[in-house]
Length: 159
Figure (cartoon, rainbow, N blue to C red):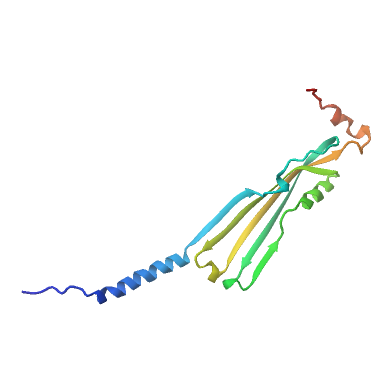
């Protein structure tokens, strides 16, 4: 009778090592793409109405991109670009000859890839900022004939 030879444990080890190596290779090379949008928290997402009478000049917007890059093993960290600030919107409003801005919102969208090997390979994350506000002009500082047409057409309701 022929006896079938049963495989030894040591005969299966190269196959197990090969499968483990392939699994680790795919795990280390796999990446996750991150796309996230949210309003920035804090004082820039509040509605502030001035105590003086005003007329709305128009909307103002500002956009900016900020790129964070980290080289392999975190040796060099570089930030390019800038964030949107309240002053950027004030400058845009000044171009319209406005006195102030109200209803300021600044939003952020994050885009980037991360993986298990990000620390070894380096990574890049991009932040897109957008800011919106309403430019206004105070009417106490203006002669009546400049704002009369717009201001007199508004009905003020007594409650």
